[in-house]
Length: 448
Image (cartoon, rainbow, N blue to C red; front, top):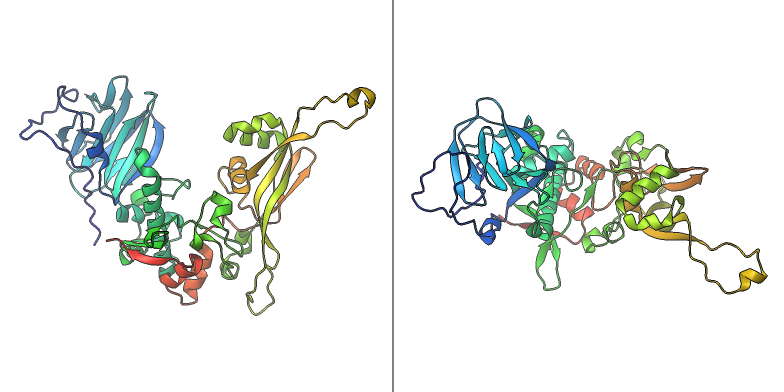
């Protein structure tokens, strides 16, 4: 049973402290030990909702606490009468008419009822952290892993899909979340973003009975793979919408991977995916825009000047051995670009040898070039990922434009193929069988 009351932080307060609402957190208290603060429940997830805001509105329909993390002071409050504003101030954070002289403020409801922030409902608690530049704040939603997943699954996979596909998605999403939390959360104030940068999280708005059932049916289940010491540890269970016919090796997409992420032939997604989703239309961008997008993301590319040409540096090609619908395989030539060679307008420095004085018609020095992972290029040019939908395509240069044509699939193609998982579920496969297919060599581990 999912516990919806979030046990978020354990604070060591002075016994018998008189909790009085004043205009700021009282002075003289010892700051909360950083190690104690960071030692939160290992299955509490800190979701970054926004990383640069100055004001937000909240509504809480139950008693709550205002917790100043810097000084360990706690102020009880009654439910809000309408919305109250949370504002960044030069000397702290203002909640309604209260000025709290703290850089970290937690608003913790005292009941399972959700709170609303900027008219979006979330369970758990909300934390405001003033950024180092003192010009903005982060908003973080602290929830249990299972509650977090209830706000993720329907945002990542349609809730009306088959139950076994939803269960497979729940296990993959749980594993991915805890993997990212373990790998990166220790060195920052949050664990995962609420966007496609990690997993889309919409809080209460994404909760449905079917996806909640999928979360409950797989509570505590994660995928793991064998490590060098013989143990079984969680790994990055990536997933994408449509692989296009073959999932990709994580090493070629993200620069790191493991055996279950080596890639498999997928005969399923084509059977169920509409042609307008399986294939994507030609898209083109002018060279100036492409240059701007790439150099903003990767400043080292500025030395290339204007990007004049994009060539394939490495491409993976897969031969399918699977018969599809009783017909010969039609994906024998399935390809996905792994890396590209960017050719700029700037020239490499010439080496004076004296020949240029004798032979004035020597060819000019070659242009400067750089190698970039194709997935990085895709998301730099099209951050939404909805135009250049994958790197399974051809790149053409025409005049002052780059054209991306013959596109297939949707997403990076690593790990679970969501449309393929749905077809497997339709074929009667269980969630475990789906996971074993897309993450071969992994096994399910129950954490709690």
